[in-house]
Length: 389
Image (tube, rainbow, N blue to C red; front, top):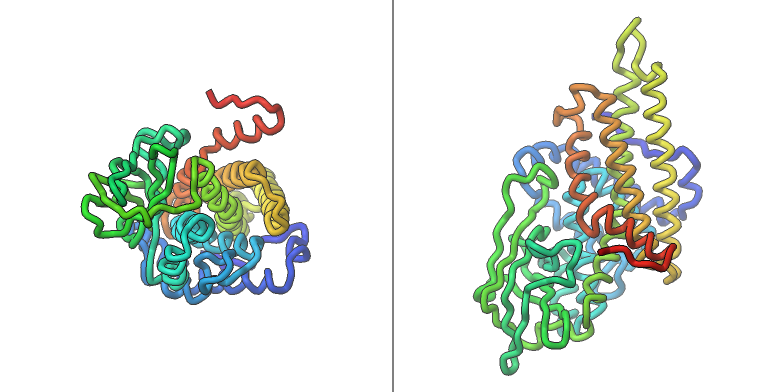
């Protein structure tokens, strides 16, 4: 593995404040010291590095851009830089932090009662409680409005029945934010681990996000009190707003994965010799690939920064985040594939990070809104015509 010194072709760092660069450097050092030495083994063994959770909590990664309850209260750009560096380590680790902050802490923070906030947010920020987000179902991914999970009112309680799939952290979570259809429309419920009828099971046999826990959730006559409902989350707009928070972090994270692959391919090309004892970096076809990579990374950095600046001003629209996620994940996956090609046969060996990133990005390309769905979101915005059906 070659050392990482950052990727900055167009003086991107000059656009960052001292505080933003400090946040990035802190996370970069954490990844270099605590993640990279072990990630290939964890990926090989399909093991989530849970021992890193207290360290990440201490550094303020969880709910970093939220206010109060012990959260770091960082800007959205600073939060994005955290996601970038974590995904430079591994998409699965960034996914864990994204879910904890954007998909569990955020809905509690935005839509929860004071009691729910006091109970869960400090514990989740400290990493002593872990959460998961239950929206996707076995038959409903891109169309969450078709969900079959139901919550039926029964006196002062609700009875939940249904199943959720592809849930990050499902079997290790202390609480799940479960979205269900009620007589009033779609509502969110906090379902605690150990509640009778609520079970979770790991999904085995993944070739992507292997260092991340991915699960199914089953709810069979799960009784929760009315106080478990998120009182201010009404309709499908609520869970979709949570996904927008997570997609924003993904847009930054994908740049980190792209940087890792580009850096590895560049250093390899400068040391690998072939034909007349010249490094393959001297060949035109290799230079063309590297030129494409650095150009797309630079464009991705600028896109992420602009959306982050707009978000900090309260002006980022969901479709802006769709463009960010769509573009940056696509270019990251393309870069990973090109980097694998540059390494030749070595590109499939796990002593190099490229194939792991490539496999991980296949999942990132699909989750939190597929590439095609984000394409249609942008298309609807520019034409005024929805074309989802």
